[in-house]
Length: 241
Image (cartoon, rainbow, N blue to C red; front, side):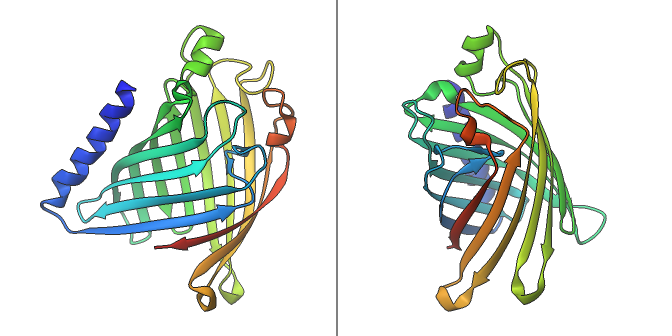
């Protein structure tokens, strides 16, 4: 898609332009999970997922990355590729930071699902609050259904807390707000999601992080697949590279 090419080229230009002047750090990650849950909803029909990504962060504050996972929506889409970039910095105190950027969601096999979001967040210590916005949520899928682009708003809050024995508690709550009724559930234009997770990194097994997360939403039915949005527990194993 033209928009995809423009965003990918723009992110690459930011990275290349910054790379010539500022030092950079590069990181990667790989993970396996019993389910790929995105915003409270299974993206794999409750089946396992293999995921991974690569990130570049520059001293200037510019960042860019790519992340991928298998998906299954009972369509031709088989892989989700996320391209993202933006700018981050600190303000006020050592534990205060902000991030402004974009995310482009690319679904290989079904480009009609592709869409872009703007993203902004503020972090204080272990608390992050943010807002994502898409002017054309889920691309052609919602445009064809409603005859016009569907706007999407995603306000959220995350909280991370260090527990004894090197465990980490992660709390999350968010709202998914659409400009049209019935995008997810008949006659509804919004739903709430939340999760509670516990994780720990184990150096004795190569620094692999094991996690267990409980997800739930207020959705009763999702495009006829009610189980995809039900309460669930997801186990994951990940490693930073």
